[in-house]
Amino acid sequence: MPERYRNYLGGEWVEAAAGQTYERHNPADTRELVGLFPSSGPEDVRRALEAAAGAQPKWAGLSGPERGKYLHKTADVLERRLEEVARGLTQEEGKTIGEARGEVARGVTILRYYAGEGSRQVGEVIPSANPRTLLFTTRAPLGVVALITPWNFPIAIPVWKLAPALVYGNTVVLKPATLAPLTALRVAECFAEAGLPPGVLNIVTGSGSGIGRELVTHAYTRAVSFTGSNSVGKTIAQWAMERGIKYQLEMGGKNPVIVLGDADLPQAVELTVSGAMRSTGQKCTATSRAIVLEGIAKKFTDMVVERIKSLKLGPGADEATYLGPLVSEEQRRTVLEYIAVGESEGARLLCGGKVPSDAMYSHGYYVEPTVFTEVTPQMRIAQEEIFGPVLAIMVAQSLDQAIALANHSRFGLSASICTRDLNAALEFASRIEAGMVRVNGETAGVEPQAPFGGFKASSSYSREQGRAALEFFTQVKTVSIDRAGK
Ligand code: NAP
Ligand code: MG
Image (cartoon, rainbow, N blue to C red):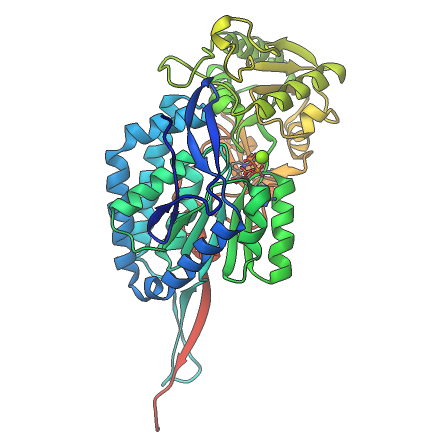
């Protein structure tokens, strides 16, 4: 019998009101059923929001350190269950077990970081014009917060939203991606085991197009934090604007790495390949464009192709695998379409580009890691987010031209440069239009204690993680206290 999972509502595990479920299969081998998950409807969302609204005043009435204790306990439970949660993550999403372990460990780190935030300063004392007045700011929670998350980081993204939301006194309804509901429910199990009061965290699984609107437009929802595609993000922003609630969007990327002539080439190759192919290219911060100075372009390209040909494609559960399958049939179709577009636009396919033929791949959503060269800036494969294991190599004549090419994109999430030249690195850091900038590092690296977010179409100008989360999940209250009488 397949495992039948439930929503987490008001501290209880409940079926969808209509009793309906959907199946999620392992993308590495679709014969394997991960489980049955609630196909929730608007009624389930309303119940979750009611539970969250009911729990919020009492939760906000606890002190920050008291709320932090629940996060600390949850972190301990999650750490104890790390291996089991990581295995489930690989099974539902397809990334390698090593990456899944790393991501669960990151969830633990984020919980501990925000547990500590519960004890840190939230306001400041401001000198009043009146010497007898105490003038200060503090921060109030927003109330009930809706979180909508994508499938590609099934634990890191839900946790980096819900941990700050909770520690600053909000209650939460989370809708995880349809393709990766299991890991989010595991997080709820950890909170439940840690004794979180009922209704403080609620999770409702099911289709975004079916329940997203109710979640964002219901009167109880005071803010929405979304990570996902630009098209869905835009709709959510419109709903939020109409209602006058706070919103935050983290969306797509088309992230470049620039490789200068003085770069440490083996390092640049490794950073490029890892940035492009880890998680099968399905990271918002994945490297999708390598912009290389002409003098080293041939050598760099040869080295990248040689390295990519050596990568082991296979099921994520196999410890030796470097990249697993794509998350779904739809995602694979999109990636194959982009590969066909690249060829028809005149880019040169250097390796990959196909569904692997070996029988071991026949039940999963595999695509070979793919490299294009002779890519020009107008090509769709140079402009659009592919979200798969496809790298486009472009050649530049100078640092100036490389930066111009890198900035020639509607996106601006992350960018990196490989060089030993401090002046070039500083020039890049100041002129690149990206929220996350790295020198001799991979575009995909993120540290949870530092702000995260993009420029241009990649984000809504707000930032997540680190102390930046305080800005989104609270509102400032300015308090002035005078003495009674004289
Ligand atoms: P998506 O299709 O936009 O889905 C994201 C979430 O929105 C899912 O939970 C989805 O539910 C939900 N949703 C879909 N339609 C909705 C609607 N009409 N109303 C409300 N919610 C709705 O994105 P994805 O395919 O899961 O993820 C890939 C995208 O996320 C890429 O563009 C990637 O760049 C971006 N991403 C960005 C970041 C970042 O931090 N900048 C990080 C990771 C990923 P369903 O699953 O049921 O469709
Ligand atoms: Mg989608």
